[in-house]
Length: 119
Image (cartoon, rainbow, N blue to C red; front, side, top):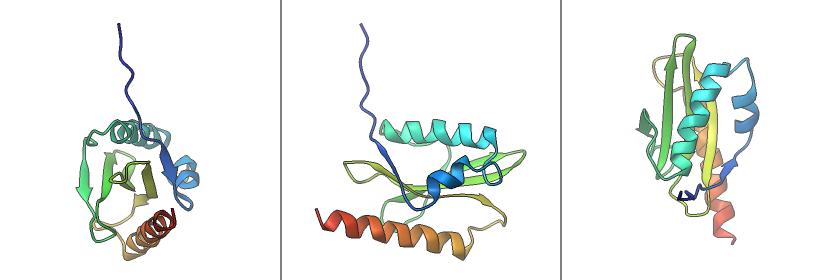
């Protein structure tokens, strides 16, 4: 006798889904790792390696995937009951997250909050 685990749906924002599928941004191994980590989040668990990114928006977290072929990041917010919102997926090029990447995630976070306020 098994049990069925409830997984929150993922809502991809902006170009996040296209970016994670783009071989020029995410390698196949990084994409596989990201998918596994997002599945943990959908199940209400913490990813293996993450960092809080409240500067983007309250409850925002960043999944950290560090592989031989690069460092990859998935910014998301899972605090809302209806879905996990993936805000931004990118390959890191510097030691710290660029202002450009933070700005993209912040704008998408604000759009999520604005959309939710209309319902």
